[in-house]
Amino acid sequence: MAGGNGPIYAGMMLKTLRWVLFAVVVYFFVLPLVPAFRNAITDLRQIDPVLLATAISLSFMALYCYTLLTHAALGADANRLTRFDLFRIQLSTRALGSILPAGSAASTALGFRLITSSGVQKADAGFALATAGIGSALILIVLLIFVGPAKLPAVAKSVGTGIRD
Image (cartoon, rainbow, N blue to C red; front, side, top):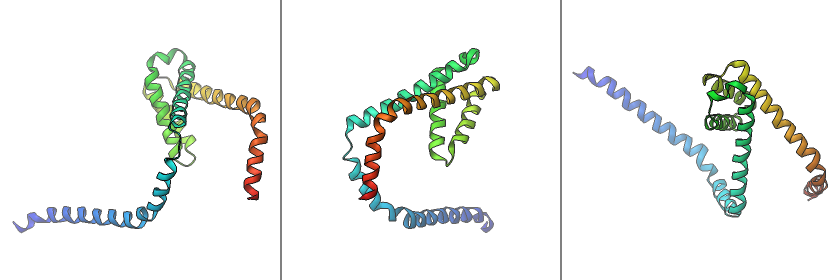
C-alpha cells in the first residue's frame, strides 16, 4: 500500500512548488511596485469624474460607430452578424491591440478570424475590415487637417516650455 502514496505526494510537492514560486514572484516583482501603486491612487483621486465618464462614453461611441462602419461594409453577409456580436468582436480586437506590442496585426487577424467563424465569407470579411480601417484613417486625417492647425501653436508652446524647464 505504500506505493499508492506516490502520486499524492508528487501532487502535494507540485502544489507547494507553485505556492513558493508565486511567493517569490510577488516578493521580487510586485512588492517593489507598491509605492508606485500608492502614487497612482493619489493621482486617480485628482481626476474629474464627469470628464472620466465623458471620455469613457465617447470611447464606446467611437467603437460603436466603427462597428456600424464594419457592419455596413459587410454587405450581404451583414445579416449573419448582429451589431452586438460585431461590437464584441471590435472590443476583443481593441483589447488585444492594446495589450500586445505591435498588436495591430494580431488584432486584425483576430477580427478576421472571429468574423469568418461567424459564417461571413473570407473575401467579405477582409473587405469590411480594410474598408473600416481606411475609413477610420480618413476620419483621423480630416480631424488633423481641420483641428490640428488650430491646436498646433498651443501644443508647440507647451512642448517647448516643457523642454526648457
